[in-house]
Length: 230
Image (tube, rainbow, N blue to C red; front, side):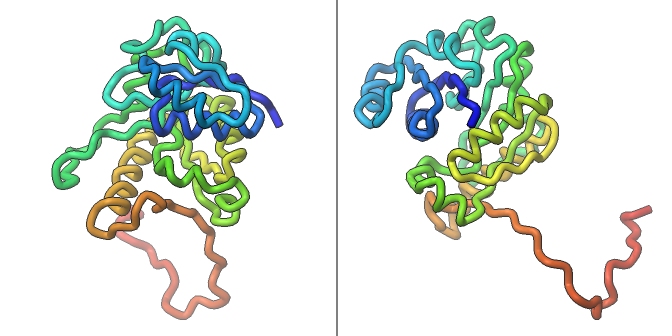
């Protein structure tokens, strides 16, 4: 297994949970935060050696940076030169509006992060599961075929992030360029509706992609030409 140096930019619920899981899997993790109580909680729950400190220290340490601060751009929290050439994983979703009445999608948080840090390699990932799901061991998540959708413009960066997904027990699915983060963030909104809205699936709601077997016979007419094909 390739070992990564990971800088956690924001060590609240998601940053702490993912960072500790990666540390337990053998990666070198530095937790950064503006808040000492977050770092104290990390140290309290760490079962393997980890480092804690400022956001800039975490950004300088990691080859892969996990950005968890919803509503802010990376350069508002770190010296943007520290991210040059590095992979920045954006796992954020927009805040939920009243009644889940979202505006039309014309941009994504990941694309905004890329514009904010043009010298970084931004990847969208890990925005479709709640932190509670990562309490499950990797083999159990793997047995459930839980999908981790990944978007980005750099193929090497996406493969490294896919490796981080696999050690958690997730099945990485590359959905294409960073522009597709718009779809992933909309998917995250749908999952949050399923978690807490009318269906009420709770925080363990997830998506698992499966490929169905082809039917042994076509008895209903099959796929016919459509006006949409012209």
